[in-house]
Length: 302
Image 1 (cartoon, rainbow, N blue to C red):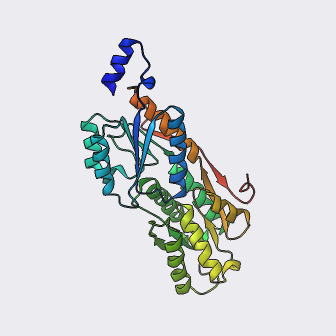
Image 2 (cartoon, rainbow, N blue to C red; image 1 turned 90 degrees about the vertical axis):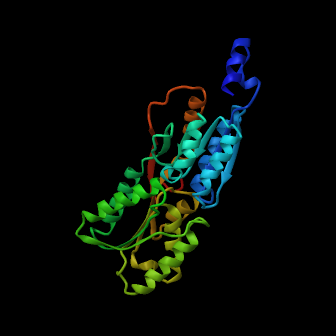
Image 3 (cartoon, rainbow, N blue to C red; image 1 turned 45 degrees about the horizontal axis):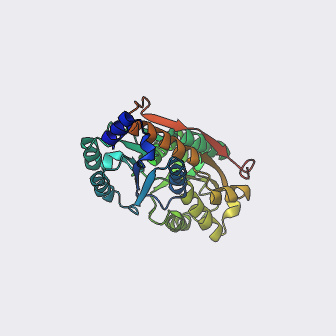
């Protein structure tokens, strides 16, 4: 493609008039609403420029991302966008690097073989929601955490929340749960929360649920309501502020707060970085943060 671009430039023709840039987006997490949102935003920006985008979902299989990268290299795409822990797909990234195909992270993790990673500031989001929980329960009580250490953006949130709760001697992390996310995470989170509620039947034995993203928070809410324990004052927070979470927060129940990530902004910013990389422009920032907002009942409907 780059040789063709040079030839067209010599002839005085625009590259876009002769061919469309080809980009592969590869993710194991397309079942997640947030992933769907920023993939859609990327596709819209790419379509507006006449690009060809191939979205590849490995349906929870992280290892399969490597072979999908290799396939994309064989197909001579102009760029690859990943939404996965780069440390787990090093062989695939090296294959792309050897072929001089730029790889961009879209809510992935930092890696020397990535042009850049475009994401939300997970440290800040986790700090805001965990401090919210600590304040709401007045610095004491048992907290259930839902985490997912296999994905760097979410793993970082758990690390920060652990540190925040660790600063309160009267807050105890009762359980640190990693749910199955193949179906999005709600169903398994509900099942795991039901087991925790059954093991801690006394009112007040659970003060809060801190979830690193919204699906576990919604699953925990369903379990609490199904057990008839919604009036115990159990505080729930999530991260993402997807539509289902916003509705739950607006209802004024146990699910009190989440962080609104600008998924459309992540997708658009990732496309901008990809366009620069394909054009051969230098991208100086290795991590690009898109702003977030705390959502509570006061602004959930906005």
